[in-house]
Amino acid sequence: MASTADKVASNINFGAIGKAKELKQRIWFVVIALVVYRLGTYIPIPGVDSRVLAEIFQSQSQDKGVLDIFNMFSGGALSRMTIFTLNIMPYITVSIIIQLLTVMSPKLAEMKKEGESGRKKIQQLTRYGTVFMAAFQGFGIAVFLESITGTTGNAVLNPGLYFKVTTVVTLIGGVMFLMWLGEQISARGIGNGISLIIFAGIVAELPRALAQTFNLSRENVITTPMLFGVLLLALGLIYFIVFMERAQRRIIVQYPKRQVGNKQFAGENSHLPLKLNTAGVIPPIFASSLLLFPATIASFGAATGNNNTGEDAGIMSSILSNISIYLQRGEPLYLASFVLLIVFFCFFYTKHVFNPADTADNLKSNGGFIPGIRPGKNTAEYLQFILTRLTVLGAAYISLVCVAPEILLSYIQVPFYLGGTSLLIVVNVSMDTVAQIHSHLIAHQYEGLIKKANLKGGGRKRR
Image (cartoon, rainbow, N blue to C red; front, side, top):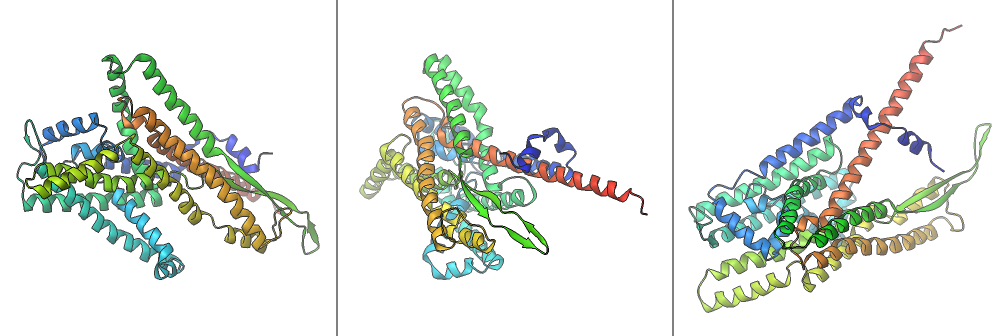
């Protein structure tokens, strides 16, 4: 049976957005912020030859290199070597490390329990770590750029210490700006700012990816039936993702009869919804971030070693080249590592999002109970049992969506943007944003009803 909120939501017309002033302001803020982000992906790093970079990344994409994956998350900024080349990935990587340390370090665990003040301290540590990570990766990119050459010349116009310092400072500034922009979107806009930034980068590159796919069909690189098969696979994945994201296990909760004054209220039946995918889009983003870090270092190091002389440099270049090959898309090591990281972060993030013990305590304090389960510890164990089974299914679902298309697409020359990870992020973020817009519209409709009721009540004559 549909709830009152569901009935109200079913009658909402999205044309009412124009009447909801606050919601309209939030949407415009998100649009302007994402436009600023997209403009930044076209501002190049000083001292870089864009023609040589285009040639290098064209050859990398033909080899299905890991740089193509990194380029997807940066919205094409990596291939253009712009100020947003690193995107928000250093911040995500450091956030993962801080969360892992919070579990292992008693000092950080105590800091987390301090409430708002503890959250601010952890956020400050994350920002400092982001600066360090961005500096480390920025230096690696500067060294990589100085080491590569194309048929038209060197990628860097004036290599040296000044170029390294300029590149590192520029990339750190880009990461910190995107981190601040994501926080502003979350606070003043609609949806999660970090996810929306990644979403905007993927969506902006989708038209180019589709055009490349159709060009491959026109050049007979892939057959027409294979092209339609890929498009049908993408549509099927979208439908499957929407179905699984809406799936939930509803646990019945009963509240006993209660008496307030001389009135007795009957007991109520409610439900506790547990989503199949509680972690959302976080596991594939976190997994990609951690997987791209060593793979990118290997790719950059291999390219640097190829231009150095000496036996030690040759051995190191060979080792890094092998690592870079094994971590390419479709390779068994890449796929296995990706699945393991997804499963780990599904359980890790779900544990932070939903705490069965706290939920059981809240139910007990409010007089609620699950039929057939004793309140307190038994309820917490029951919720943990159900949550574990749901997380196993959720991790299997995310792994299937992210890895199965990779296995298929690794054997044909189709842009990575049509893969499962990108579709999962786009669909998930879209659903989350639409749901938040829906919530704002429901709140606006309730506010309108309250104002009308007050006007009608105020218009009555007193006797």
